Amino acid sequence: MKIKLIYPKWPKLARQTEFHLPPHGPVCFAATVPADIELSFCDENVEAIDFNEKADLVAMSVMLTCQMPRAWEIADIYRERGIPVIFGGIATMLHHEEVLDHADSVFLGEAEGRFSGVINDLKTTGLKRIYNYMHDFPAMGLIGPARRSILDRELYNYRGVQMVDLVHASRGCRFDCFPCCTGFLGGRKFRPRSMDSVIGEISLIDNNRLFFVDNSLAQDDEWEKELFRALIPLKKKWVSHPIKDDDEILDLAAEAGCWYVYQAIFDTSDHIRNRVRRLKERGIGVEGTIILGTDDHDEDCIKRLVDFLLEIDLDLAEFTILTPFPHTPIRAQFEKQKRLLDNDWLRYTGAEVVFQPAKMSVDALQKMYYYAWDTFYRDCSQNLQMAKLFLKVIEKEKADGSYTGGRLRRGRWNAGK
Image (cartoon, rainbow, N blue to C red; front, side, top):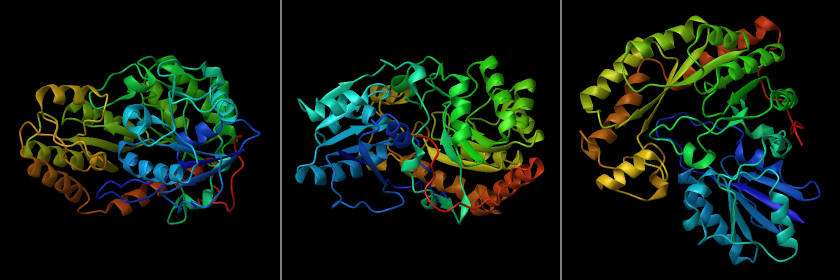
């Protein structure tokens, strides 16, 4: 039996430098596919789909809402040819009722310990319409190394430079941030993997540069310290979402190879100023993630915010427009207030206004999105700022002897299953 796994393309964020990271969802899913199943993978963001390739089942791995329209187009083509299609991934969980119009089956939830049952159904009684494991989470011990061998690593680079590989040390999130659907998807409980499992997987990854895609590493102080201490001997260089603003944790993160962090910035407070300063004092870069269009934002407020970002010397800034994705607290609020303007999922990229702002017109907020990108990168392009960050990581690698030249090794990687 052969499964063709597809990761659909999506419209990229306007103004952002285009680059492609090895996707995380598909390689985690691939690790749950029984070993006797032939598996091929296509990431449509970096290669064309061969619709003539034979397959007994097409599996669509869909992470983003704005991937959905293209995923449906692909699925319709295969189903017209008589090939069954199953959908899974974050966006499938957010849109599963719509997905059913384009799929033979949908898989909701985490696949560890479950997908072999899907294969058995396919071989015997036929696929169920819905496999619903939402909030019926598998034991964390079932999560093994992602199956990175499905990737053609040569396709993932930025101007020939080795990019990061994605990995996760935990699932779930105890926070419930207004623009985020993690509470709906992964539950509001912090679910860490065993440290041996995490470090074991990282040791298998033939890449010195990693991205921890956990929602936040700052969910349990002692666990966070344990993770960073365990990372120190590996000499990896890594990126993550927020880490705890604590002297001991920040010092451990720097020693463990923290390269830069993503820091949400909502205001111009001294708290944010000091948080960025404390990271940079330890040689940790900061990429600000800035949502534009919250209810306290008008045009002058956004201009002051951009000035503040330049003043505190952020390494990078990623601006997005507040987007009311399904099953987020902010969407529930906007629905109640009748402020939703558009459910064209192709526009839900984070670069378009799909709701009525509180203190601006739709056109004004769209204009301020472009203003923020253009003003922040006016004196130094995003390409150049990214290059500076890569120079910093090369300096770190040379200092501890882990530098390997920074370019991609040829051929497919064999890390993981």
